[in-house]
Length: 534
Image 1 (cartoon, rainbow, N blue to C red):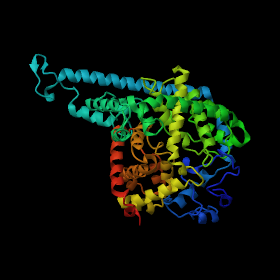
Image 2 (image 1 turned 90 degrees about the vertical axis):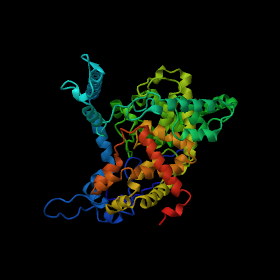
Image 3 (image 1 turned 180 degrees about the vertical axis):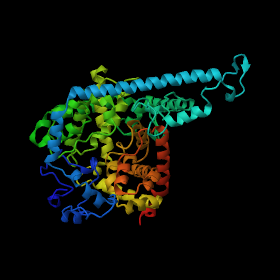
Image 4 (image 1 turned 180 degrees about the horizontal axis):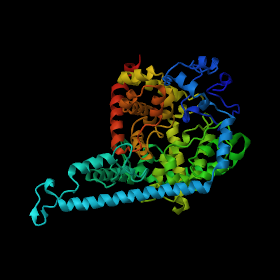
């Protein structure tokens, strides 16, 4: 921490009080720093504890961890110099050649595994056939020596299903039917649920209460776009009015673009647009070369988006920039805050599905008609706005909504799993240091995008899903990792675990279990808040 750190306020109000003024959020990328909690450390000048003879001691508290890695918390010109040096020294041809080589090797490995699996299936089928060499094979033990046995096959399957080597699952494709098995085939039950949705949506006036009940357990991909628009309040329940409402709202959005977007380079909007321009998901090396200097801002790239080529397309990034800029200047109470950029992503992906049948992660949006792209952009803007209307206190000055929810999460966890709560207290892990991001980004950086979309099916169906039910989901999510948490024996290990939870292999099954546990907690505590207050 720099020596003048005590002169700076953590929740710093922007001096320019103009509509759309940016609010920098340290916790959107890193654990928030609490000057009150660490006042003594600042006064002491970040002096490291005296060295003790023998084996170096592990950092077991936040103070020790911070004193050891004090340079990692500095915010200043050093960041600019590092970014500039990285941009200058970056050989784009080498980077792209390496990336293509890695991609090729991965595809080659996947193809070889698929071929081996196919050969094993053919061999296994021939050996387990009732007739082999003109005689009946009563069991696999009578099969020729060297053939794959059921136990070996099961062991191989388990090995390939371990978290450290998850099955290859498209990040966003066919998420309505996607499980960790990676098989998108629709079952009879899923086909029946799809029919129920279609019947409900086909009526002249959709019963929204019935639609919520049906959507709580997940929405089929084919009807997710219109269902989200209805549940968010963007579309009316009356079928005859929907087309006129869509036309009017889409025209209204592009009226905002025409009226306000050119002002993005004005002096009082420069900070907002610049932050948005940085926060939009970018993984192409060219972006580092074009913007080597970034002052007082940490590059904030959503955890899931860089893995999806869809979000590397320039036209998609321009759409996100317009959506976020228009929202920021129309909501001066909060302006643009780091993390809001994440919340556009699920809406955009779901509404792209409205116009395509194939997988979306590698889809080239330039192949869509211009009208379809405009519709996707406008619909994403309005639905994101509806979502943020219910949680805007998360993004106003000092972000009081997030602070209240993090405190409620701490109280709730202390009641439902005292062991986990005391363990984190013992190693001085503050809930704000990891749960801030959970609230600010609605768990989007903790889960794959396919899981976020499934989670939002239930949030859309649940009353106050994004603002109230999310608290219980976070509590269930934290307790889900109790074994791993209790195994960590120092502050550093706990923070690394909590900020990098192994969920990349998750699918519908894991999310459904998480939601069921969250509903149980809500049922037990929502109407009896004193039960989790000390």
